[in-house]
Figure 1: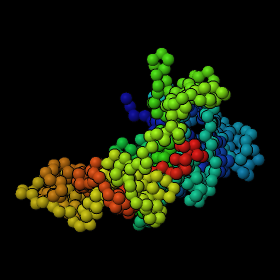
Figure 2: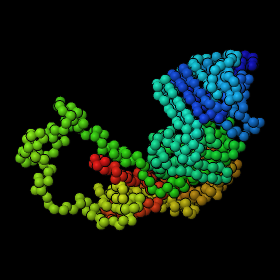
Figure 3: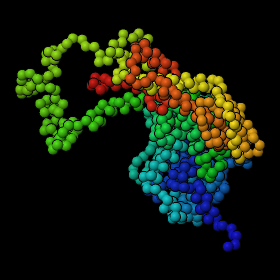
Length: 629
């Protein structure tokens, strides 16, 4: 087949395959255009999950009538100067509108602030229609109908309406976080509406927008991040270790205001939380990176979701260091949702407690109550009635019933005077007032030989003594491990590892850093390194695999965290075996000493495996349980 020039429609459809993956991709491109136009209000309407209709309306600067034809032409943009390295807008490639128009029915209606009227241009599956007058307010309305009708094969890969609507909602939320001063509205065909009211561009306003998107619990369980290193500024919020999610969907990252899904940033977040979260849990984060546009490449992919940093090691180190420093500075904090979960467990119907039903099955007490003949309380028929002890006496409405076995006179016969605690260690002397004012308060008891019950001025605290001491021992081991060079063991025969030349060169450049962690290596001719020492803590290890893993990490992130993480894992294992075991009886002084150490140790709210070390229940919650509030 001879070489030939592709048609403009075919070129646009090929570009659409990269830029327009699904309806959410269309919404992303159109909303970014609205924000680049200076909009303060963006309204999105969808139908059929976005496949039938997408309409985005803004109050931005608008497009002059004479420029509408250029707006739908490929590689035409008003956002890019002559320097591709100086990108300060969300869009810049000039591909989105012509790509959408090649696979759907697209119409653009716009009016500028100085214009007397609006104008409209349409594209029907790549066929451009002439510009015509229209009626509209200032701003732009872009309407996309029958998405992918011109490329039916793409429709086979679309998911259900609910899944596509959910993806669109996620895109809008992700963009909205970066623009708190803009009001966003998203309405779907299922009559559900997402409204994000405009706040302001202050720190409080940005956190308010984050709360709109991520829920009101996040600000109460978040730590502020603010760090600068070599011209790169990092700001935002991360969750405390005890506030987590089952997936990473609530990890939002922005580079110069652009929402990104970057593996380097995601890996840095995992590294920062590596030893405070369980393996199957993820932190909740909102991070904003600001740096010189010339030091980051946003032109990696047409969808503009990926970026590439000139100095990835600097960015990763800044993120990991800033988050760990913030976690250490925040002290010990329990998630506010922990008390809510405990309260929910105590509510009627929340637990599977039941009693036999009339047919031998089981039904809840609540269901049994509602199944009674009368909605009023009848102690004779209550499934929760007290013991029936003593002679009958007059009661409700003159009816004769058995006396309440828990009445004061009935119980007097069983009174044996003051009783010692069920746990001999519960008889702790009255704590000093100063201890009650501490974060974890004063120890009152040890129950089940593993849980310390403490009291503060306004809460009850339950501490898992083994998990808490495990974290304390682990942090002490880490400090000792990283405060000096890691002891190494000399290999009887050097281990020669064959590598690509570039990997061997990278390892040689980081040899001084690796030596601090006990790994001694040097170049051994072209494409090889000789390992002469390994960290003694590792014992017998697969040197070949370790070196190759380090080479891969240096190539990706320009760091040697792999070796450090392996050493930390060994320290975590040693801490688990060297900590206070469950079942050990503690004196009051020992319990209080453990609480004070926890308060002084960063990250002690979770153990090495990410489980919480303590739970706090506020006095107000306890009073609600007993109907006092």
